[in-house]
Image 1 (spheres, rainbow, N blue to C red):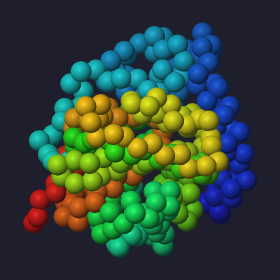
Image 2 (spheres, helix red, strand yellow; image 1 turned 90 degrees about the horizontal axis):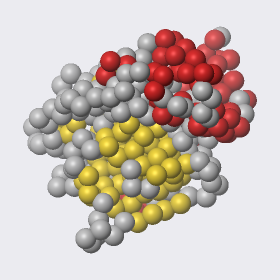
Image 3 (spheres, helix red, strand yellow; image 1 turned 180 degrees about the vertical axis):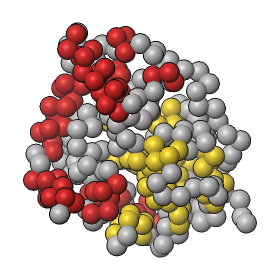
Length: 285
């Protein structure tokens, strides 16, 4: 019964209005009030500030500063792996893309075509590839990093809903990640094409990338596309480099075009992961 009403509440909730209010509050420099709210949040979610470059909660002038805090040097060493985990969070699902279908949860799939904003040509490149869906909770580090070195070729902002993306909603709302607002970042690499899809959610104040800044808000009603040149100004990012961030928590869906992606043997749904840990390889066998 709880699950039924929780899902119903998600459909009835004025999600975009709440997200606008949350965005305003997250940017507010409220002095003592902001400091008290940050301290209460850190206690509630047991945030480990010992990993932060700035461990003093009073040093953060706004919630956004706190949410997007940097880690101290060496807090996330990169594993010696072809693909490293791009975020701190938990594994929602991972595996092979069956044709164009991505597994969301028991009884639910969505397509690469829908996830990538209706771009059929791009979606076709990921048919029978691999995917990993990674959930970032409110307590997690909110910056997103490169799983392997790559050159940016395209960014797509796809408007949509702002459902919560917690594990319960992933089990209950069909096509959740292809329905929510998202930012699709497509890269070419020595190991083939891959994409990082930054999925928005209710109360996520904004999504931004290191090359563009804030992509959303504003919440557009039309798909927006940016293509990036292959020249001396090409945007190339090393493995482990920051590529974007969420203002609060949400989900990243990583897509790999090659069919021979092999995920780490200790991966399983629900397992906590950290940025920089071994995620997998693209070797046969």
